[in-house]
Length: 86
Image 1 (tube, one colour):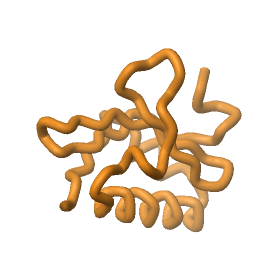
Image 2 (cartoon, helix red, strand yellow):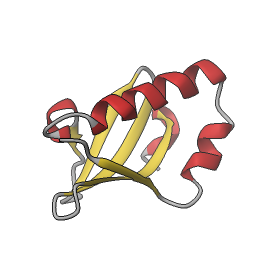
Image 3 (cartoon, helix red, strand yellow):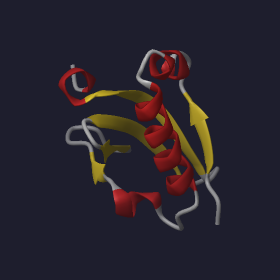
Image 4 (cartoon, one colour):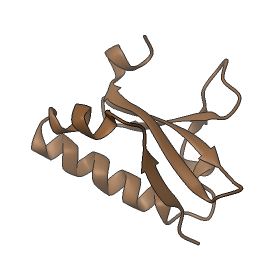
């Protein structure tokens, strides 16, 4: 089952400022994640937030909300691990 991926406004703009190689790795990871039966298996629940999940791609983190009703992965933030949890 393929999950639909949606991005919060501004996320793609933030990613466009990253190195091209990092952009490719993040894109590949998100594409693979959308093909999973359960995207929760690759990530960890974000502490203090009920429905948010975090994924690790090298030194970068992807914070998402997984919406089971609409089979959607809603990407909220993507950034370097030192900046993402502020």
